[in-house]
Amino acid sequence: MKTQSEKAAEFQALHESGCFVFPNPWDVGSARMLAGLGFPALATTSQGFANAIGVLDYQITREMKMEHCRQLCASVNLPMAADLENGYGHPPEDCAETIRLAAEAGLVGGSIEDYDPENDVIYAPDAATERVRAAVEVANALPFPFLVTGRAENYLHNQPDLADTIKRLQAYQEAGAHVLYAPFLPDLDAVKSVLAEIDHPLNVLGPSLAKHTIEELADIGVRRISLGSSLHTTILGTLVSAAEELQGPGSYGFLKGMLSGARRDELLAKGTPD
Image 1 (cartoon, rainbow, N blue to C red):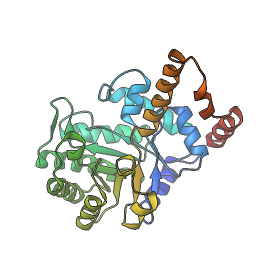
Image 2 (tube, one colour):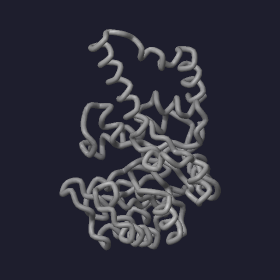
Image 3 (cartoon, rainbow, N blue to C red):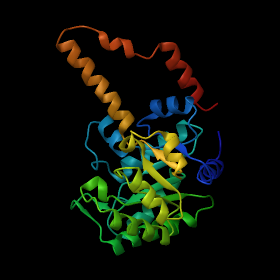
């Protein structure tokens, strides 16, 4: 099993050139299968994890999330980062403590978003920037690289303001964020506009730009493509369709998409550390 420092160095190197896909497992089994498929790094999905244990997004406590991350980090021999929501608290000190706990859990990266789920508002720019700054200070003091992603949540919460999104990302960059992310940018032109105004690696949400290939996103300078909860939601869609088929015509057409036992076992074996 690689050390946390080795995983951290690998993760940092992935951001230095090219573009990589960063899928989001929701449990140990999905993490090992994705590792077995050859992805270079993984990230948790807060919504996927929440739904997998029967609750809604933002109903996961920090303690629950850290235990989940600890299990995932120990389950695969890959760098693991996490969706750390809003840092599990409003003050910058809460964001700082979340990063400390995240590193303790085995993670080598994590995102801090500028959305306040408790009050359903985007934090004011200065407050949001200070929260990122506090997270970065803790990350930079660790004995290995821990990449903090500064997230601008405007487009995810019905505030489609590209100018404000860019200003926020620039502020988070100045505060030291190692990676920048604005989920649900609407199109390739918006991504290009962001890339033209920042210097640090940009993560994009692949499914929201699904009409463009990974190669197209890489060609314009995107460094990292994450999938959010889309893999887990796809599984849920298959589950519901299968159940409705059973309740409706009473047939088993859904079995055509079933993974073979041999393939399942192969991927789990490949993704399990020696």
